[in-house]
Image (cartoon, rainbow, N blue to C red; front, side, top):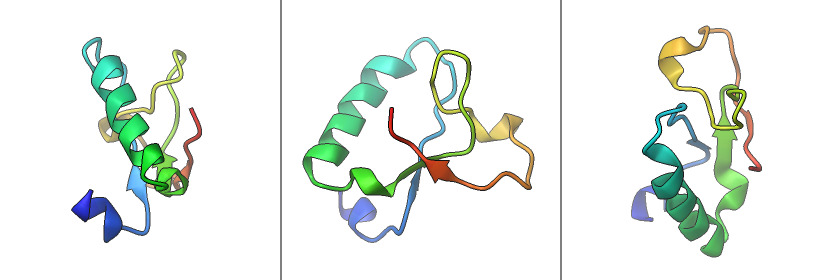
Length: 68
């Protein structure tokens, strides 16, 4: 949370890894509980709604608010 307090935005980018959803949900819950949900952004979404991993994103893509 200390790092998030110093950020102007947080890029969500865990990809479609099968182990990610449970941990991501917990981290997102904590961030939103602390009133920092407005800092969440993504660089694209996979078909399942998970934020794409940056390895598969073109450099020209700009962050968009993440509301999932």
